[in-house]
Length: 101
Image 1 (tube, rainbow, N blue to C red):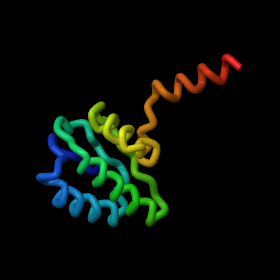
Image 2 (cartoon, rainbow, N blue to C red):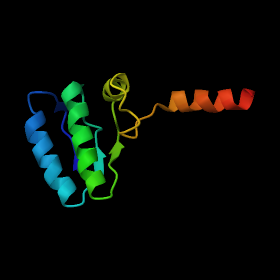
Image 3 (cartoon, one colour):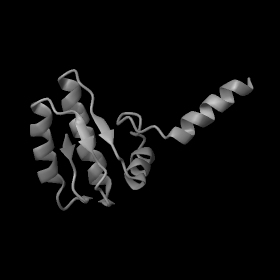
Image 4 (spheres, helix red, strand yellow):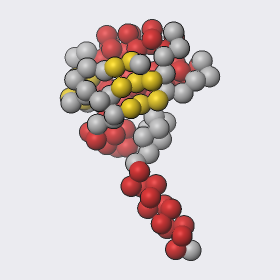
């Protein structure tokens, strides 16, 4: 499992991207985001690049322990579904709406 440290921002994104791409190329598809406490839009870009690399290998990236701030950024940029982060509350609201009709 690829484990992220406490920070994924523009300061370290290039190194994290490079390391993660190497791991994905070796077949790693599990990412532990549980330690992340500081993120910016660079984190979303890194995860998207890893997802593209996994997809090129006919695999899918699985993100675990995604902090709310990262999920919110992905949602803000409209890529939460690409990363498998569609909010559970939104899905529950959709199911509730379907049951009303």
